[in-house]
Image (cartoon, rainbow, N blue to C red; front, side, top):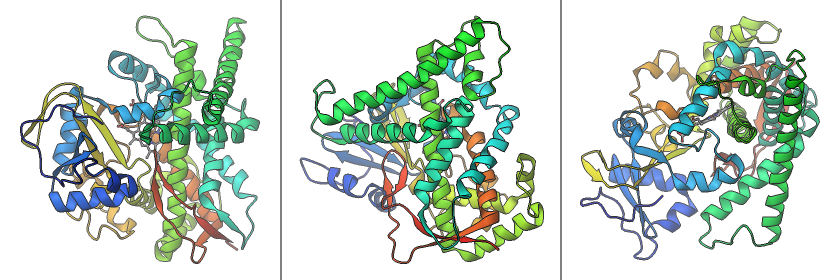
Length: 455
Ligand code: HEM
């Protein structure tokens, strides 16, 4: 995030130390620092980190300006790109301009509701498969459990069953590469990737492993297609491979590789985290948990949930909206200006980085009564439609809004319903639950919970 050219008039903000600005506070506790600055300095805040300025936007109208109204003046921030480029190449999450527009157009049909509902049964099956190993009274880390469950769902919906046995290996590789890239991007000491350090060598191996897996599947599919055999595949990869632009062109193997890796990464971890925060919040709020169970019992009896049931489960939907409010897996979005812009009456030059934080906005008492409290009820009377754009944006907004939103809400709804029918969870006494804002919002020490099977 870099603003090297100082604008004429800067928004208010803390001075910090002459050399580092606010770097240490931001690095030590980014969430608390952002909230404190927003409450102290108001709707637009200038934060200096080392020699660079970042502009924190805390008013829905300003967030709407950047995400929607003036979106063409912004690109994703360099930090986002630095962290993810190695893994995601030119995938949807970080590509820009005409290339991004074409890729989004090609990928969009794969996420049409009529397509994604076909994955509902797979999602419920995976929930059943993983939870069948849980025993009454045992303690498990729900963060790990949910990661394994959504990884399986991601593998099966992206690649069909082709990769099922490899899910855990893929998870380990992705996990390592994300930690490696984040550490590198945040470290002031830049060790070139070509140096043969143990970490660089491992990053190389893990990238090669993932690449070879994905390229192998693409090649096998292309061979099948060339042989003229009917296409038996019904997964996201098959949709991306058959997508054709208006000029008759299709994605190259490299583009397919970048997009599948992007969907894999953007999709499974965010959903896993949201699920694990759900079990934590329900465990801490037994009244909400009981009301959810009652709704599931009334609407479903004992049978497995299906996609069509979700609209008859308003409390379930409210629980998920409330979890995404309090623990948004994507807790900030950053954009860098590629053209001069005016926000909140201030003029900013090219290369100004703006930060919009779901964590900050979703806890703003101007838009949410008693903002720190977990109260799913708040969503039951149409709150979402009354909120101004930019007050609640767990999936982002504007043209770069999450392409997987429908997919994620389907997965969250079906998995929470299915698991809550059979289990409730209680946090192990004394276990510290500490939000850790890495690329996504994780729980630093996991979420250790005791499993209670329902009779
Ligand atoms: C609870 C789950 C999820 C959350 C909270 C979430 C959040 C987000 C957010 C905030 C953005 C916008 C980022 C920005 O503007 O810089 C985004 C973009 C994206 N998400 Fe998600 N996401 C979730 C699930 C998924 C799933 C399941 C998929 C795919 C299967 C997915 C794929 C993507 C992609 C490809 C983009 C980039 C879209 C573009 O720029 O065109 N996400 N997501």
